[in-house]
Image 1 (cartoon, rainbow, N blue to C red):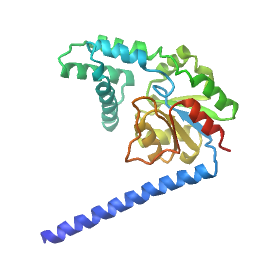
Image 2 (image 1 turned 60 degrees about the horizontal axis):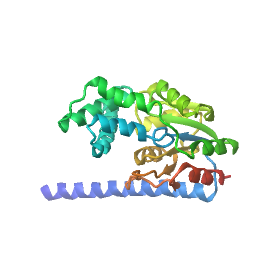
Image 3 (image 1 turned 120 degrees about the horizontal axis):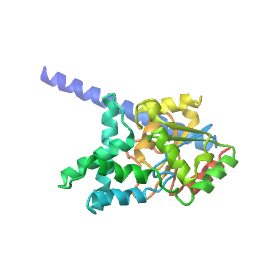
Length: 263
């Protein structure tokens, strides 16, 4: 009886892996066909932080709050992302910056550093709203607009936060629409977030392309049936277990050249 049960589990596991592999191949094949046919997406969705805006100033501020422990910055960011997903799974919502401040307190406490709630929020909320754009961003966005693309920002940050960011970075006029997951309450990379964004812009998932510098964001978009363009900024990596995006370049200027070449 035990042997039969083990064989059954083994067979169903193998079938599951086979189905997953088939799904993975199907997604990759669909993306490959779109590239070969030079099909333009109807809407370009842009992640904001790190993709368009340079996070150096905020990283410096967070590093100082952590007593100069710059080595803790990656841990802080992953903790922030982890607890945004914890909130989503628990059907809760808090401003992404507030979650970032809470994550900063957690990381600090685990390393014997004392940070008050106000100090944590000051280290993040002030700097994140006045970040400059990466050097190639403005010219690239203008080229995409001139080429007839519809540009939409799509961020985990709040509506007020991204509006302030774009005003301070001089990016406000480049976008046809600004979408924040604040309006639907589930953080990327939850599939519902991408489905919601596509519905808001009245396009199919296959007609949507996400430009992002985060492997988890690109993975979420591709799993939701979107297309993807990855910006491999320093420290950014694609998730090896997700389908590969059709575009993978080191900056937005190079991504723009690829997008403009599509018909």
